[in-house]
Length: 205
Image (cartoon, rainbow, N blue to C red; front, side, top):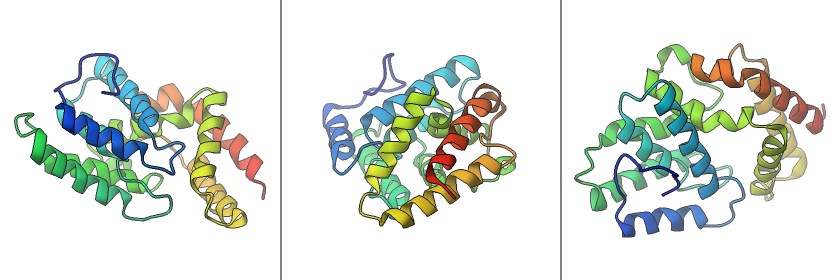
């Protein structure tokens, strides 16, 4: 599921169906199965480049990290972690997962832009960077992501959305580090800063 190579463990058909249904639940334009597939692509790049200490736990956290998503809700990640536990308990008892570690990884994604890199372990730093790698994507892909986020927040008044989005993107742009790991910093920092500067300019003062 979501991967072009054999995953670290197989998903039973009912488990995969439940995840696919979750990521297909509208209204979503960015936080879809396509996003998960992109993050899995980054996961596979890390596996080939630096390796994972706990590849199974990270993989399951990626599959579930946005399974529950309602734009603007503060508990999406916590609810996604609960779903990860429930699905694993039902279908993945033999997968050797540390569900406490899975939950800890998922809830980190609620704090993008406010994490202390020094407090993150190696897997956690690479995990959150995989999720944020879209910031350093080619310009057309970044712009499509930025537009998709705006659609997901269509229920928010436009002035309020633009102000909040500009504040978040500007905070990333002015941070000493956008990515927490050296691996992603070296590869994507320059591209991410160009993308973020362009997006902030579009949103205006």
